[in-house]
Amino acid sequence: MGAVTEPMLDIQNLSVVFGAGRMRVDAVKNVSFHVEPGASFGLVGESGSGKSTVLRAICGLAPISDGRVMVNGQLVKSPRDITFYRTAQMVFQDPYASLHPRHTVDRTLSEPLAIHGEKNAEARILEALREVGLGPSFRFRYPHQLSGGQRQRIAIARSLILRPKILLLDEPTSALDASVQAEVLNLLDDLRIRLGLTYVLVSHDLAVVAHLCDRLLVMRQGEAVEETTALALRSGKASNEYTRALIQASQGFARDGVQPALL
Amino acid sequence: MTQPLLEVEDLRVRFHLRTGIVEAVRGVSFHLGRERLGIVGESGSGKSQTGRAILGLTPPPGEVTAKRLTFDGIDLLKASKRTLRTLRGGRISMVMQDPKYSLNPVMTIGEQIIEAYQAHRKASHAEARDKTLHMLEAVKMRDPSRVFSLYPHEVSGGMGQRAMIAMMLVTDPDMLIADEPTSALDVTVQMEVLRILDELVSERGMGLIFISHDLKLVSSFCDRVLVMYAGHVVEELEARNLRDAKHAYTQGLMNCLPKLNNDVRPLPTLNRDPAWAL
Image: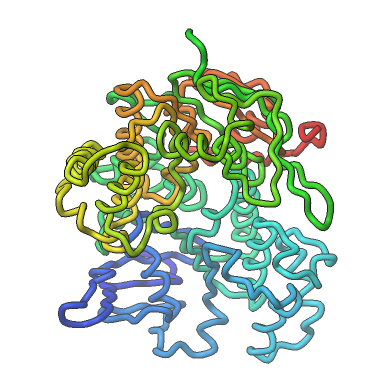
């Protein structure tokens, strides 16, 4: 391979199995990929493809049944120890569900600091809010006093407050309106460059993944279909038939096989 | 064109709340023939409330007013509850976003469709059953008789949505209101469902109102598009001319989508002009 730097995230032959016997479900089958420090990697697929399960297996929300997961050069322990969560943090799909409805923004953001015994909480919270483009006036609001985009910004602030190296993003914009999605995507892009973060982004939207990621893995029914680059995706150079079908479907509805005009 | 199927003039939906009056739909006017009309907008733009108001499904304490709201000559605002009941599900149907919440979880799919049919057409159980199986076949179920006896939790999202469409179309309605019918589905399944809708619309000559937040999808699927913002229509245009949209909101909405070909960084964001909401 001749990689100069050691990958930030290295996944070899990962399998995730739920249940046993008749109820056995192979959610992820033998998936391998690696992500360089500061890079952004995409996982694309339809529901049930196992893309979210890969993320959940990395951060300990799903079992690693086989294979290995190395984060920052170290094999992850099960259960994950506290230093792991300083390295990797996750942002979930639905900001309406991932923030505690009865905790203020301040409490939401101070919790990770308290768990990790961080000092100087006040300044860190204000800085975290500034980083995601929200002013100090948002500090004592409850989630129901925020719009969807603002909530997702708070969820991103919470994941960044411990200064992790890797951000695991599970459909971070699919619950948001198109105009808000643009704002959040720009924020993520900007933060990655500014803070030197490594991203793993899960999405069903090819255009979103191509926008944010350089390399990506297409998954289907738990298996890796192909690893490709955003560049290849843009030029329509997908070798796999399934990837081509995804590209075509993302361009809009085609009546009688006529390709829709591109917007 | 002959007389339009649906005429809407100055439709308003108001909610009287403790905190004041919220006007969700503020003077929407349009007419629908036997065509595919798309209504696009972001959350809170009033697109779903428009669809609901047409069917008289505005939740309390909502109040609906309009200068004119007629379906095939029938005034929907003055019509009796009985008339409305025969129209709803009979001549006008509505497909909702998520089959998980709109199908009855304790009835088999087949029985639900039969129930819908018998509520509107005089038919024996056997006739209704034949019609149901036929309809399940029309929405491209691979094994209609098997799906007939399944419960909603036993089918996938795409199959559930097709079952919903089968149920809504079994009475041969003249008009179908589809509120985000494919948003909960995977892209490839989405295309399949759209193809079925498209076929049914062109074969039966139905009028279709397709409500969605997805500008790209609507413009490739519909004939005409209404763009809604803050409760009113800011622009109406032919779907194929979407690229020549005049209104800054429509243009902004199109530009802020990441595109596979010719992507820009950072993405242009929407600068909301307060004047749009006036």
